[in-house]
Length: 137
Image (cartoon, one colour):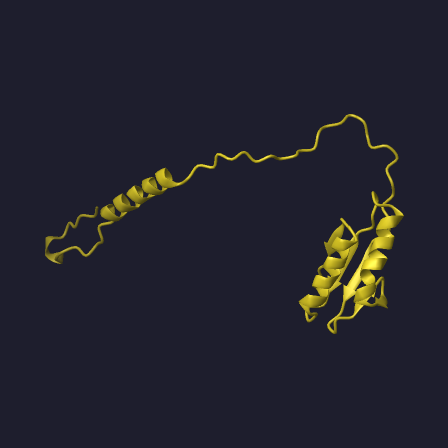
């Protein structure tokens, strides 16, 4: 609280914040008491430590560069491909070695429609591709 040393200056116009702080503390305590406590356990599968290295590590295959331009045309490693043929090509790539799939690197133009990207992602999901990345320019 501020005190004035000059008696002729008149009344003080400072705001008393003590009641505001009291109200805020009471509200804080009310919210803390009424907030439900999470009592449901969450199962987390953590990786386990192993002493032996992986056997015969495979060299990862070349990534698949998938580009979608502004007109909605899809390019598979710089060659045009129809959106309807994507799932078949992706399934062929997965069938080569399901445990060592190539990464699907998707590069989209800022002006491309989202519907084309949604079809590409649906084809990748249906083909069970697990390594999908987005390229940022």
